[in-house]
Figure 1 (cartoon, rainbow, N blue to C red):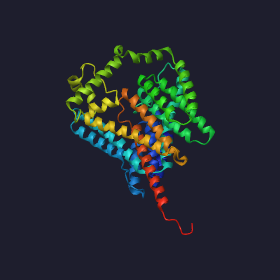
Figure 2: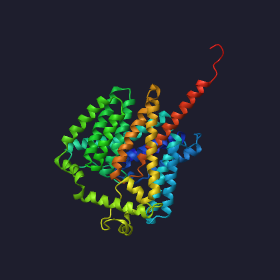
Figure 3: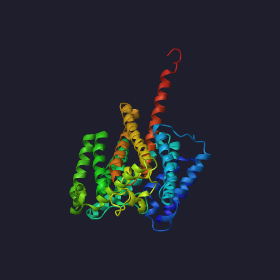
Figure 4: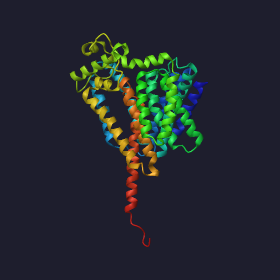
Length: 427
């Protein structure tokens, strides 16, 4: 039954996408983040729904009268440079048979990032996108929070199998980035019942993050919550609610969970932590030897290269860090572009929030910019222990930052034009 419902929903959306291409971005986001076909049990689990929707959206965009302009900002230029650099490093990859398929996967995500930039050009469309992303991931937050409550926190929370967020670490990071988006929607909601519903979803999602039993997610959660309180309106109420929820959740979790979190400070004795440090040492040594091009995608999976650069050649591990992943795969130049991209996005959010915070009509820009800052903080901290450098959610948030910047610029120009327009005689 689930297979049939998902299939009908996807194929039923295609005519709407042809007439309104931006709907394709919403449907693609729903499929990419909620992965409804992955929680089915039949033919839908292997159907290429996302590809079908992406192709339909691209065709509809070409045929439509929608403006086909990419909004060029500092972040857009940095993103293009980073993509081009990743293409270049793939040509010189040390493991080409693994690098080229990964580049194809990354480019598919980036194509839809630029489609998002071209189509989600109004406040209404942007907010619809935030709703789709937040609710798609909150589905797993609410589900995981209830699961943790019912199971007493003994079993780990996982994401949909066979996806970017299938593992406990991955879904933990995704949910950390989702909570600020739920908070933004709560700040904009006018109905009391909706504010309560979003508040409950936030609390259950926080519990779900604890239920992943991911130590990296635990650190990311701490950083995210602190900044969420600092950047949000109504700080006192939020401090009380989140503080009480996290304190209760902390006490609720079983002893095995507390022992696992305590092992963060005992990394010298932890095999997993030592494996990550070894992989990071490999990335640094490789980047020093090949500072321009690195080793290319998936170089961490090449035992021969690993043996050449790793402190412990026998302990072959994946990157387990967005920073060392990019450094090892794309060299110091690629790492510099990657860092410049996210620092620029962070600074743009801060500037937008400051410039519009005193204008009641633009407070939504301030709220969204601040909440994206919080999401990016969770990504920066949690991602330090997880190899999700090409996670589509991060680049969707980047697209939203760029579009906020452009919308604000357009409003400023419109206001300046109105102010300088000659007034009719006699007024």
